[in-house]
Length: 130
Image (cartoon, rainbow, N blue to C red):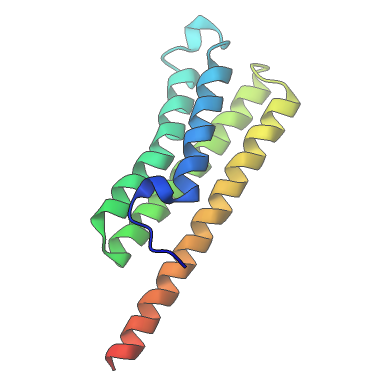
């Protein structure tokens, strides 16, 4: 497996960027009175996902990166709530909600898998040091 040298090589980061673009496009049609409400909240939580992944990757320490990935999972949960609210408020249709939640679930699963991989690598390193 090739060494990853940049957060830009991480599938999670790239999928996160795609999701941000989707959220910006979809929220652009929200009512103007939501500009500083749900529109802003959705955009901020979406942007935080790839941003936190990038910041955590740059820390270059497994435990710190894992912590940042856990924070990214929190942002995923926050965005999931916002998407549900947008649907409940009739700002988005059910098929848009489903599409966004599917992408968000994929990112969340990828993030949990990366956390597991980092934990396993940490365990291997500790075993080798013993």
